[in-house]
Length: 146
Image (tube, rainbow, N blue to C red):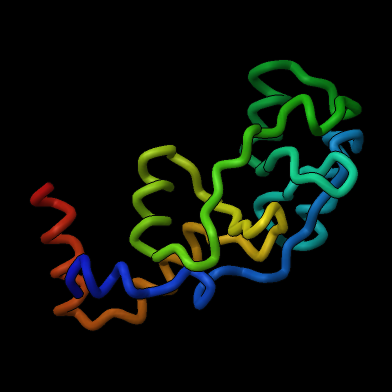
């Protein structure tokens, strides 16, 4: 699969559309519980209706263990902000490059300040599983030669 072919694959074909969000005033423990109960690795953090940030289970673990945050702390105190995102008409290649460059595992898909979905490292693994062996080798040959 060439770079031009990968650039034609739209994100909206592989993103997860079922998104959970939490208000920034919510506690770290509330966010962790919501992620656990919904089997999801991250939440969009909102202030009212506006997207303010994103928080992952890794952010929570680091905040509690490394930085000594209390479980009662507001989630806004540990969220990543501003949100790194892509638009729904972006390509899979753009998403992969951005995720690698910024070392992130979840990438919100936002159009006109409204969340459309999220693309995750797991979604990209699913996409890779759909490649033929020849396409798979081509993707990695291109990546390793750069």
